[in-house]
Length: 276
Image (cartoon, rainbow, N blue to C red; front, side, top):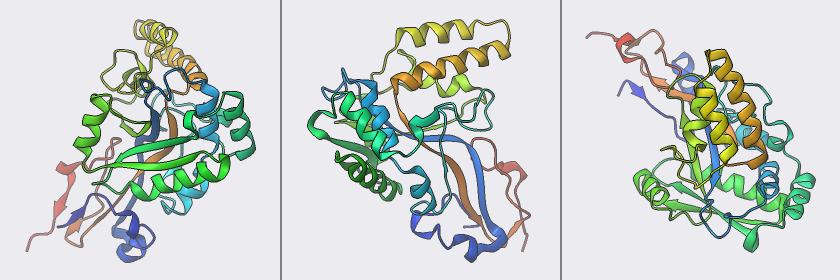
């Protein structure tokens, strides 16, 4: 009981005051997104402009500031900051809140089939508040109806993704396996990648990824994946929302501040607890 892994959304506004210097608020390399299920009738042949429009309908600044109490940072790339190859502002305007442009892009793309979307998420973690906020933003900005589609557990959520049973879109979250930009692209959006559960496929992206992996240096690999990110920006295989932070706390029994790795996990072998 000397460490809380994740402060619930309901306590985000007060936990720093309650815990003082025992509160942890530290960025780590993970990105939250919402992902269209491209195998569905709704998104199978969708014009990417529609997804770009939905992205621009989301007021990331306000949601991260209010609902999430500034414990997240709006995403501007498919890659998390701190990762080799992260390029600030890589996605440009398509992740900026602009209701007028959002409506325009959706109309130019032929509209959202059925004029409604659902966002699947696991209800055993604290996702409902931000899913509701994202839906409200989309609804107010574009008139597209949006609701959450909760699954009782994370495993049930994953099972629905693996079985291609997602009705519309799903919550995506990716934490680095290794600190290179390829991990946030090839491992999620490659046609045959294990992390790709949306049915997205782009032969040009697959080809560029393969070439990047065979490059003669890490610098070349990173640069080629930065080029590949621009392909993804046109296709929008997912809508990046925000970058995670560790929002945690520790008891008075912990000696010093707990150190965290780039993956957001505590470095447990560095933790010391006061003896009785």
